[in-house]
Amino acid sequence: MAVFERNPIFDDEAESESSSSDDVDDAASDYLDQEERLIASDDSSEDEPPDAKRTKAAADQDRKFTCKSGRVWTTSVPSATQTRSHNIVRQMCAVFTTASGIQCPGDAIKLLIIPAMVNVIVQNTNKKAEKVRREWNEKNPDAPKMWKPTDEEEIYAFIGLLLISGVFQSSDESVSDLWSLNNGRPIFRSVMTENSFKELLRFCRFDDNSTRAARIKCDKLAAFRDMWTMFQTNLKKMYKPSAFLTVDEQLVSTRARSSLKQYMPCKPGKYGIKIFWCCDAETSYPLAGEIYAGKQPGQTGRMNAVDLVKRLVRPWCGKGRNITMDNFFTSIPLAEDLLAKKTTIVGTLRRNKKEVPSELTEARGRKVGSSLFCFDRQLTLVSYIPKRKKCVLLLSTMHHDDAVNEDQEGKPDIVLFYNETKSGVDTLDQLVRVYTCKRRTRRWPMVLWFNTLDCAGLAAYVIWTCKNPDWNARKSQRRRLFLMECGKNLVDIVLQKRAASPPQSLPYTVRKAIEQIGTATSTERSEASKEEKHIYRRCVFCGRKRDKKVKSTCISCRKPCCNEHLRSYCEHCDVNPSTSQ
Image 1: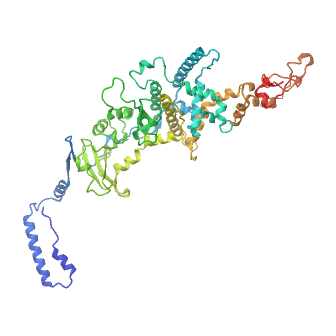
Image 2: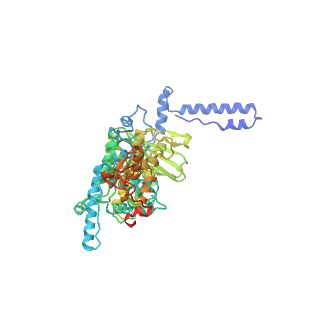
Image 3: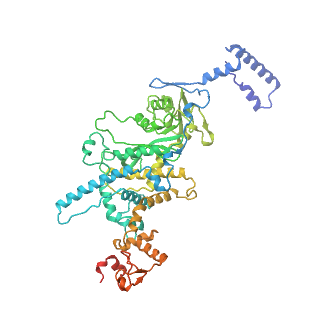
């Protein structure tokens, strides 16, 4: 169809009001002659319907791009249909019934750090400590050392103290400072001695050292594999995620000597152990993780990002969820494979992919804030210009149009959705670093153990708040309060046993520390019972003949004694009764 252009004569007429009427008539006559010639040269039929004309115009505007792989992209927007099946979420964010019986924050973390995991630590820690003790005593018979076997209650108390130290942000504070009488905190002195805590840090083991040499030949993570596997199983059993998930990596910073250590300059720690996570984009709950061990013994080829993502998201495929990821993971084959399982993805895409047409990677000559959309069946590719000479590519199987948000500087909906859901793993990393319980160590299994406790604390917090949404809802530091309560719940059994022990077996400073945190000692309990009962009993030393009945009792054996047979000590001598006369 011919294109009609405005005659420049009319422009001159508008600018000059003094033109004669004869000139106007001549100009009009010339314009009509030109119009007749253009109509005569038009190829379109006068009877062509309006719909056919619009379709023809749209076809002229449609562009097609062919990439290196031979895939053809088109700028034509697919026709709108009803909600696609892969965008229908069939499970909502919730807690499984296995987590319904929790009564306190300590119960929530025990769902993730289960007794089976603690028993593995108990067995292997005792083995390691006994081996070291035996070797020491053989070399130093004149200075033998003893080891009191640890148990499940003590390991849980050990975990509780680690969580509490994280609440106080004391990861860089020495153990001696935590137990200091001047600058320390009473909770640490109340639960166990400083030496016991140091020995648990030293001897803590997560596998059988006698069989590790055989297992490490086929698995670099043999020293921590069993603990990690059990922890991953527990994470999946307790929580149903929302509709949007995030896949990304976390760097657990460490300077320990290990083949697992990676260098990532963009991360805060720069050096550390890399863990790939799949997290809930809304709550940052860690759903599944995989430790990057590099090339395993017997492995051929490099790590495949497509297979990695499939392993991480396998339990949630086929349920209408979306996975957000960065350009390290995003690829066309992955998008098509997950789409076949009714799972969509949104992610940034590298420019060097062979499925990307060259027209979308060019940023020169394009306006800032402009977008170029391409479609191929259920794949949507957008090239966005955030600033001069910079081009960002995003791939989506969730979006099927070229919608942009004018209120957000013309950003495409795909870009806005990516920005909203991309930070699930980054938020996890930030949260666990705020109240981390890690201690300085040269052993990489302990580095992973501290990070496991940090992630378990965050996951337990999500579970607890889902079950109890009104718990401290108006407090600004809910997670800090939760971790503190969690730590206190874990140390409570050991603390109660220690408080109930005879006073002469506890130093004065320990008894005072127990009283400071609000737990009654055996001395306070005996005095309270005397005030309540007021029972007169016969002195055990005076005998039946004298029949001398008194209210006073021995603070050690709690037998009734008269003033004649009682002895009083000052606070110094009470700590060392043998020094008193």
